[in-house]
Image (cartoon, rainbow, N blue to C red; front, side, top):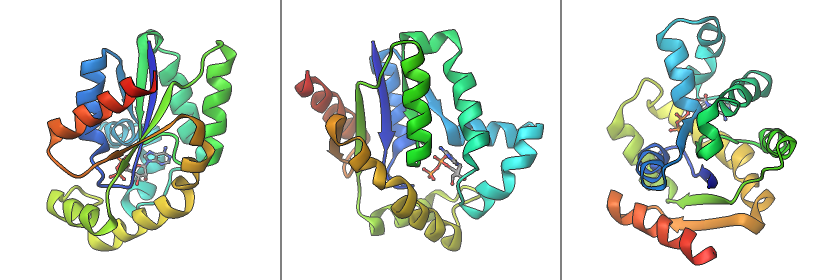
Length: 184
Ligand code: ADP
């Protein structure tokens, strides 16, 4: 059973890799960005509360995000392991995650960092063109990553696995899988 977190700047390819990796490893893929976008698309109460943050590229407040993730992790499929994509994104969220896992005697096995230079990620995001992929919002998301999320790399230093995120999709998936194998 594997419990993983994927971190990397917006545009590092977390979503693509998380889909491939969760399939190969037979674990659930939990993407907070996707969960939020589904709520917005379905016009739920939660969706209405978070839309402004996604539109501006700001983090959704922890009280909303943490509750949504705790509920998702309580679903039975997470018992077989999970890959969190886009969560945690700050130290407060990481602390809540450890706490929730510790309540059932669990902990993370590894945190995988996808490393990609900032100019490469900005170019990729501009090409993708999602609703929050305009230049100003992208710049804000990169800034939020540096200020809030990058400190997690130190927080998780003991279980951090760093992988070069530049290359073909399959190539990067294989890099992650072999880096995870090398740890054990
Ligand atoms: P990207 O990695 O390209 O920024 P995501 O889909 O992971 O895309 O996230 C999109 C947006 O969803 C973020 O800019 C933020 O507004 C919100 N979001 C996602 N995950 C979190 C989180 N863990 N905490 C707070 N906000 C989040």
